[in-house]
Length: 102
Image (cartoon, rainbow, N blue to C red; front, side, top):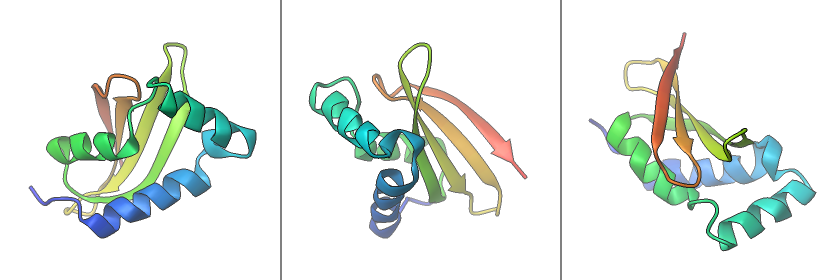
């Protein structure tokens, strides 16, 4: 299994800050407060967990509000060329599932 590189991690952080629905305008401030209060795990920790589940390059990261709380969605390009979406509970870091895309 290939490790996710530091460059890929940095790219994922930029993507997370610039392109997710939750991180828009005032939502960005809310996400920061949630993280500081301990209600969200750092994205870096989620990315480490993702490496244990699936190797690949991070294409996109989203933080979404769910009925139960918050969920990180990581879209990866696998070494085989598939795009897969990994779902993690943003509070506990629990891996919630893997959904493949063609």
